[in-house]
Image (cartoon, rainbow, N blue to C red; front, side, top):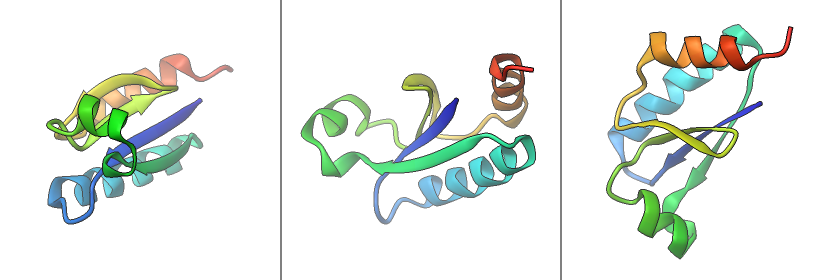
Length: 81
């Protein structure tokens, strides 16, 4: 499982989302990464108005803000035991 934070440079909400995801994923032992929506025209078209966007294994989980309880639940439910 991988969490991806779709971001853009200079976005305060993106910076906060990255911090939140880093903390939550770190606590749960889940891999995470970032991707700049402006580096790819398709990403910019799909996610550009909603950054930050949180993806779990490439599927959109949420955008604008990290809903901590919801993200934790999705990650715990999806993590193999």
